[in-house]
Length: 488
Image (cartoon, rainbow, N blue to C red; front, side, top):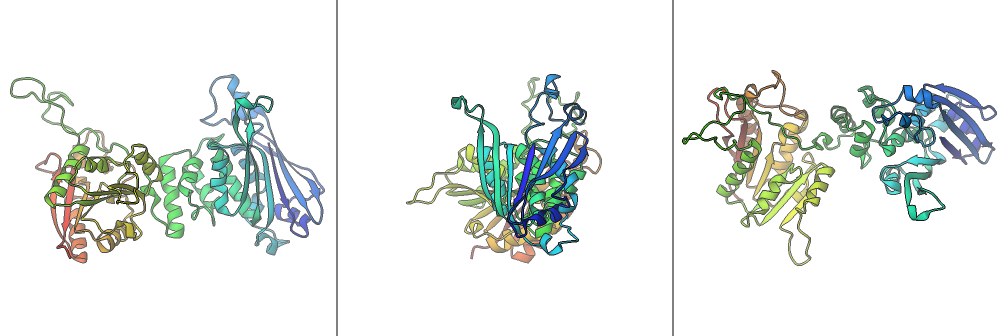
């Protein structure tokens, strides 16, 4: 596999100082999976090109194969890895250009600190998503992107294109930034790595992404792909990126999971066995807690005569779907920070088609609850159903100001788990939370203390209710607070 880096900065041969590789020598660097060669096809005062050629040893590659490598015997030796730029090339870059990636050049420090004209070429790059994906990831970084699909066979155009692209990037970029962007985005575009993704990959991502990843519009997608969709690692990385620039809390970009394990029923003859009804037959299965929550919220909205409702943290739109079924709700809006969740809601055809002559009854918006947003205003009621526990406590104050202070609906309905009830769940370790994305879970007293403080601070009154079977010792599994204020 081949990577070339070209500059026309005068004198162009200073590229050798930046890369710490002399233009007059061919150098070899051993890798665990082959050999990396660095040489200069051209090295003039007006134009200089450095090339990194990686020769992959297929036997060595088998010894370092990652989880995603094909398992069948022939596939371990016959695959695209020796020829297409991927995590192998990124690893070779980290080994051969380590000092350049750190932005160090003792002989030309002023050159290392400033952008220079660069042209980067990769003749074969696996790119899941095609040329548009390459442009989506590189263009926001200031690159002019030329990504052309590689046909399966030029002699048979009817076969279509392969999953590879020929990529050429041009722009004025600091060399260290360019190398670090390639280091992250090559395996991201391939959406695969040749080695197991462990916790130290978070540190590598944060280090290589310094100065550019936190502000990238697709940082969540880049992070997920780089970390092989390992939820715990992705959550940690996004949290650190959010802290780096005060951005919205991307950990809210969560996959919808069933968070209630089966509770222990001490009165059941067998675990999970339904109780008999009055006539001796089997009783119907109990209603899921998720359904009870939705019904409790709907009943509250009915009792408060709310017509215009916004679901903050709507996920894929389960509550929005139920609201849509009732004509009494005249305006319904779902909001979530997760682009993936918004896409799913759109595939479920939840939003109404916009009509120039009338307001859409149902809308789905992408937005963060930590920033004020004028789109959140003008509703009778706002719902935060199982949302606040996904927010880091230091950012909870921002959510309070956005919802209760700026959006300021007449009614706010909040549901959240009751931590005291967790002892009734079989298999849930002592002190563990019901969902891996929860940042906290409150007891009833803690929830009432928070709700009372928020109500007093923003001019609301609050009442409390349990959702689910009420246990005499630990209460209901879900607690609900209904905040109301007098209409202005």
